[in-house]
Image (cartoon, rainbow, N blue to C red; front, side, top):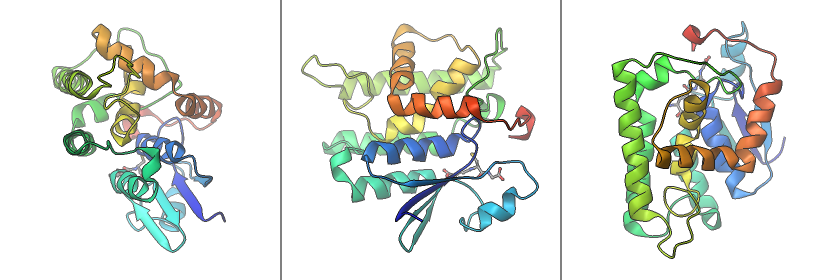
Length: 221
Ligand SMILES: N[C@@H](CCC(=O)N[C@@H](CS)C(=O)NCC(=O)O)C(=O)O
């Protein structure tokens, strides 16, 4: 096994895995990937072989076993500072942590009612009021971050804090949900979704998700 291993779930369905995977990709270091299909009879047993919480993602780095996507992001930011997973400037770094934590702990209506399903496209999906509230808060966050922290020299990379950080990885599954469920967005938010979509690592993930064979009914996720 390589020194660095990321244990993940199905690429089509596992939103937390996508977050950690994008963060790890951003470091540029080589890593081994262990994919455990969710919702199978042996899923719990297989995940428990690696994960004390019984959930994925899990990062294995030598003797370290690290669960929770947000902790994985913080660890990678510390281990590989050159990857820029946290903004260099103190205020930007604090806000990047705040928006990441808000994503990690919040937006339950969106997460429950619009589960990630990368390869599927729905038309005329009815957005419940509670989901719309989550969408409004998320797009407000995106706009605030982009207005306050984007590159000030006119070079607009499209990311929330100028360059890609762990906050963008935290929102990548939201972009996928917006595409899957055909969520109508204001132009600035749509442009941000397009930025995430165009990231080569995101494209690699989506291609792999489309090639997976397992189907999990949405209500089980
Ligand atoms: N708070 C955790 C959430 C992890 C999580 O819920 N992972 C799901 C997959 S996306 C899981 O492992 N589910 C176990 C299962 O379905 O058996 C994190 O941020 O990593």
